[in-house]
Image 1 (cartoon, rainbow, N blue to C red):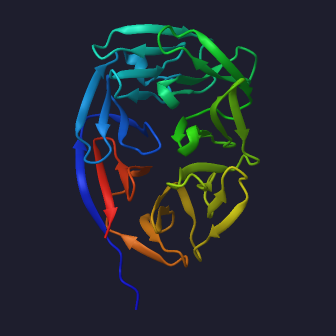
Image 2: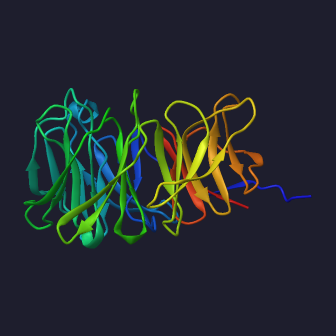
Image 3: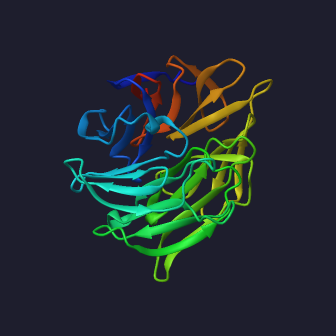
Length: 306
């Protein structure tokens, strides 16, 4: 008889109007949280507040064009994807520089993140139809150092997923019609980019080795494990009379995901057996090794399996 697995709450963080949560590095030692007019850097171990930036109280903060942001404990500094510029904020909240680009309004949303050595990166509109650019920027000045053109189908909710070996996965996480993904890292020529061969899977997580990625279906369907960087299908998880929905993560040796019909979060073992977990209904964000964060509008909860 196998041992029953259960969820254990490790920590909790409360704040009004939580909009976005993203891990800042492959080790997930810190999380970037956008809530109201604040951008916060939280510990990935216990959700304690490390730093907070007041990035503006304008009503436009909640309108079209505001994307996923990044933060770094080195400074600390924050990198914001705003409707018409990428902005770097110093620890006191002042703007060190702005990289101006064509507006996201009416197009979708981009994202910004810190790569290896705190190199700023962002996805920005090109001003040429549906084409976007991945740009590498200078940390000190915001000058553009390199770019690579991509063609998102539906650039909504684009979020970065930090992986080992300097890779960062960037995906259309809220696309209604398609969901494409790219992987970005620095190279001698500027930026190296890999493109996913699908447009109907959400990029959800990467394991600690960086050799396996996890995807969920665009609407509802199976969870898939793929090798990286080949992106070959290694395993497909299905549950009879059920579908998985957006959001899943590795919690070794399990996978944590949402079931649609039963509206529950489950742990899936290596033989595809499913165990219901007593957790809230927040969306799943991968956290530090062996944990995940459930996100609701007013609460973050850090969970582990025991």
